[in-house]
Image (cartoon, rainbow over all chains, first blue to last red):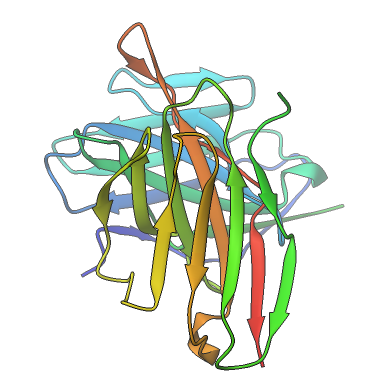
Length: 111
Length: 116
């Protein structure tokens, strides 16, 4: 079983739609959680950190459920520019912040 | 400082040749990481440096791979006797803690290696 699991997609949605991605992680000792965005043939870029209380950044909302070891990302009012791969990322080691990445979920937003 | 810099951006090499990649992290970041990403997968951890000390290596890092960070600044990743399975994007990242808070990595643009 992979340490971080995501549905690879692709998710095809029209502009303006709301879309949600989910992710599960297996290491209950994980301390930090993130969503990264990766455009085709580019490096991953931090989209947002994920906190137990939930957090929002504009159209993006992230939630963490430690009991279920489950992380989610909600994107409202999708834009064409949101088309990318969204990587669920977990820090399983408190010693040196080794990040473990899921395979990513591909989002395609169409006009 | 414009971020994490990696060179070269692309490298095509013949099987059996040695290749070396360079990473220049953000100057105030004391932690540096190498990851490898193949098509359709997320990045996989290879190794980690705190200043000049290499403190962790993945089992993915076979004997043909070696990484250095001689003065705690830039780092190099060398692959000897390359194999076709080494074809991947090699990503470098750096990070630091501010007031005890860790704010995630900053990745470089990566070096895309193709072994033919």
